[in-house]
Length: 293
Image 1 (cartoon, rainbow, N blue to C red):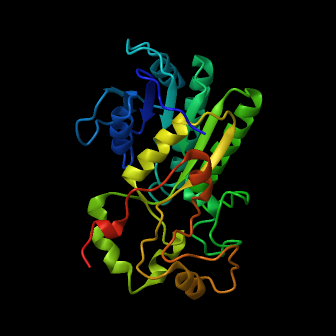
Image 2 (cartoon, rainbow, N blue to C red):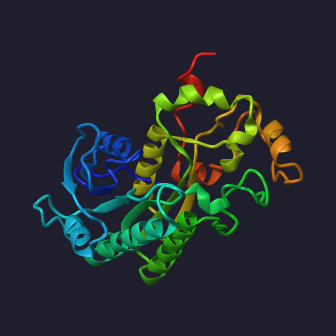
């Protein structure tokens, strides 16, 4: 169940200069949100709203940012996207020390400033990626507990655990974890053709992806959701990165893994049924729309 954002509602978006951040900032601004974007570096292109440099490793900076002491005014919500965005990009200790404390600081600053609308980037990796150990069933969904296989994923799992307890402490708090799949921009789609002859190349995330524009839609719908509690949602596109049918891919790469429902055509194996049902999420983009046969 959702309701539209009220004109003038202010949202702080962290990680605004990252891969997903610009699309989120632009989408929220286009739908009536007053956006304060933040990152340690400037965005790759001019964005609507206001940009403030901040280090999320400093709780004081985060608290001031959400409280609006820079004269932008207090925020009504926060979208936390900032992180080292994948395993293997930095030493494990660096990834953990950057990501988990920053998320705690955002959660704590929201608590201190009275913000009860928190949406943040969790990850598809909590589902058990890279699936060297096969998933319990297909399509995967939010019904089984996290199975972190890397330090990065362990951090995301701990962030979700934190959010569950924070919403237990404050029943009026809404904390939404968006388990984003591999974020793609339209210019990335040309290389999808290179995977078509080797399905094993992308089995690690069940051939999933999320168009940044559809990721931004999911963020807005999560902000507008009227429930209060912790919820986690897989956010992927409706199809896979492959031209082959999903049932054929599953049979070839995950023989013996049970299907808990029939697969239809090229549908995603990262189930978005919950996001569709609870948020009204419906992807609007497909990589096949961006490439020629």
